[in-house]
Image (cartoon, rainbow, N blue to C red; front, side, top):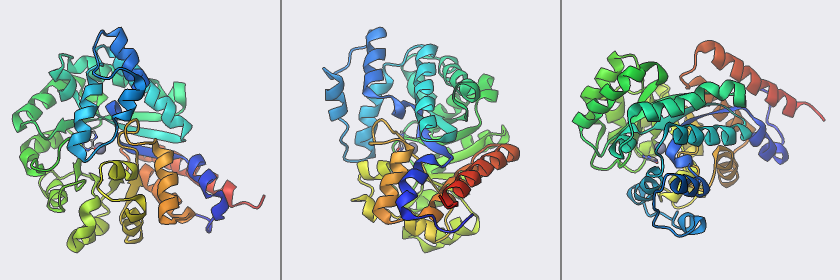
Length: 347
Ligand code: HPA
Ligand code: ZN
């Protein structure tokens, strides 16, 4: 990479640079307008009179409080076309932020509990992802997340239901209410997913202590940690993450909305990057947390006075720790390098 690019051009650089998004829940991209439209066409009644009233309810005390409202939005999704349209809307929006690759979380258990089949859900999402190269000029793949508040048996059932759709899913993850649902609860089902050849990730250390990150690494044997921001409380864990180059998919605006940090200025992303952690920036649930990926980049960089070297590192990490093949990663990193060279060149 070239030297530091002038800070006056940093906001433009953050928007223009190619990036991958590796931590976003597709249901968390449902904007209130789309929730209302789908509620109307599927005859689902919402307890909010207007789009504005629903958006005004997006104020949260913690993760559980958010998950309760998020769950209301998931009830409007009924048909394969709904899942397809939701995913298409996210991909189109992400591409405007120069996201060239997205790995999308889906919790099929939520929708199966609402009466949809795994096929309806996965086929709708997969159709949008498979059209992404031609429609949007990007790539996208799917990670199926178990809901950790449900039982191990239900996670096994979820995995079983997904097996006929095996080729449409790249990985398995773990989401939902963290505290009281440690990774060890899912050791056996993650071992089974690993045998089946799935790539593995898990939310850990979003709200819960560093022990949950140790558990995700040692019991679940995941390749990436989603969030992981509580790691800075444990120096042995920090050493492990740096030594083994364990990627963290960090979601700064989510952490502020869910009160994990009191403000962006107090976020530990810069501290972690400067300590050698392989971090990335992501939006988590962009319709709920006040911004898509570029908004996460621009607000975090301003709050933590980060520079173009951090930007390059974050964008490069996002491609390198993705589940893409080596050739596609190289092609995207070349595109990233070309943008940085263009910004470094004298005008
Ligand atoms: N954390 C855990 N589970 C989730 C989240 C999150 O931020 N968003 C959607 N499911
Ligand atoms: Zn998440």
